[in-house]
Length: 322
Image 1 (spheres, helix red, strand yellow):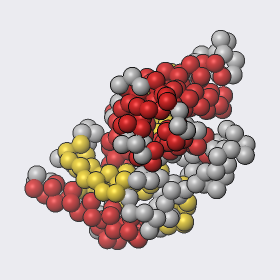
Image 2: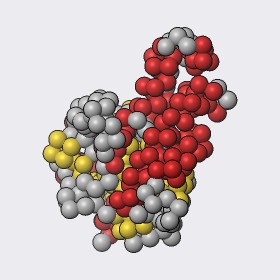
Image 3: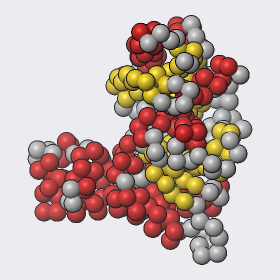
Image 4: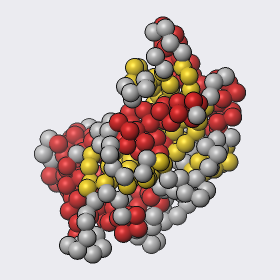
């Protein structure tokens, strides 16, 4: 049995999994992302890989490779993290640093590339020749799989759709710009809008505040999603607003890329049709040439929160055996 480790590093958590050749996750490990300390993140990667390698040995197997999905711009060499809006990486030689400590083949790629690859290989994107995958988490990640290959762009940083400017002069973004798409259609956007509503003193926010124990700062994306799924109209309104921004951005991507399918994953996508319903409606309204062109499907991802680590494990294995 060939087992590989996939590591998915996000803005708030490091998730890792031991994955077989069919994309099945044998076991997982998880840690909080250690702030903005690049060395501490490296230590965390080594720690979770060691934990999973020990589990593999108990199963009578060895880890053949490691794939690390990084939330940032990864160079074409798939070794160096050029920049991360949410972490401290600046021209970070992550692959070599981790590979020297683990003594096994390591591949580094953008975390959204890993999720897109997993959905194309094992999930909702199977059989699609022109796939765009969007991950809605702390921010917005994106990736393209074209005719069975990841399109990384000339310099390796294609797919940073979250930093398209939708609102010139709008909300400040961690990337240093203003008005980026992810400031209006991401987990951070949901949390910001929900907390502003909770602080407003409006009676429509009563249920949100009750769920948060009366503290607006305790309102989180998962709490809002839970309230929306329970029928709270204010929570549903926030998701509708964010979904509308999301669908508008999808229409911009369709104008530029003309995909056959959008697959939407990440933690925020767990809101399901409460988010994707308004997104599909805004997408159809905003699509250039609507009514006179084929329209891409907008599908929920199938692999959930494990897509990134599954994809990175598979990419790492392929790289090690190429």
